[in-house]
Image 1 (cartoon, rainbow, N blue to C red):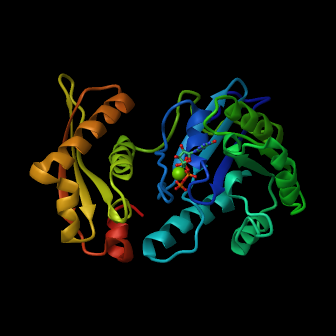
Image 2 (cartoon, protein in one colour):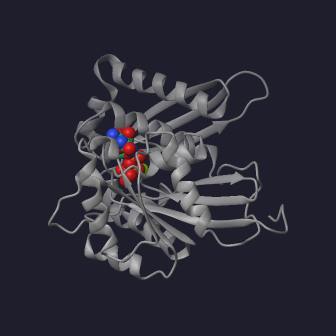
Length: 302
Ligand SMILES: Nc1nc2c(ncn2[C@@H]2O[C@H](COP(=O)(O)OP(=O)(O)OP(=O)(O)O)[C@@H](O)[C@H]2O)c(=O)[nH]1
Ligand SMILES: [Mg+2]
């Protein structure tokens, strides 16, 4: 969509990096809306999440991607498929690295990640994130030096994605490297993804926040009904899919207490996201080893 014919800059920016680096946190901060789910556990993001930033004569179409990892099962392969797709079509690569995890003497990136970066001749920005966790700020200069020596990045910026000014710093660097182009989307649009997608992500986020060990990784959420109503609450019915029967009891809890709690928290977050009161119904189902089965993954939209 071409809203402004002249003097506009626009482009696609892929946000990539290791799991837990702060990719989703940064995108939310830039867009100014909670679009992508965030948790303290790695591998929270599984699909791509699109976030559109438009201001004055600039439009940046971000895609938040799953954290880069070596696939161990089919779901991982689907996740890494999204990363390569986004990298191959981006105008700018925005790499986020958790600098508090930097291990001097060990390469910060996997060789296949470096190969992926080298495969694209587009501007690359590195954000060294979580600097709030570095007590002695003098350690930052040698850290920056390690990345500068790799000669991969046009810009290296230390940030803390949980602080509001980091979004502005990242935006400035991106805008400087953004191509001249007409806008791709309407100026009001924040994403292109469906409400069903965001609702299922919000429920999945509650599961990441409330359960430990393998449960978050064994869980998928499918919205089976989404009814917008003229009057009264919108009706949403969703299935929480698990991998094994033995996991059902953990999610449901004694007398259904756990499931009730998840439902209440998710409903509140969904209402905030939709700006509408909703009635949320949750069911628990088992799909044996769904993470390793192509047909299940396909049916879940991977
Ligand atoms: N202290 C600190 N924590 C941060 C910062 N940025 C993100 N976090 C936290 O790091 C954790 C991971 O953040 P996410 O945004 O989910 O990370 P991600 O890169 O999207 O992770 P995956 O989706 O798993 O790949 C969350 O607990 C965030 O609150 C930061 O600048 N400082
Ligand atoms: Mg994420």
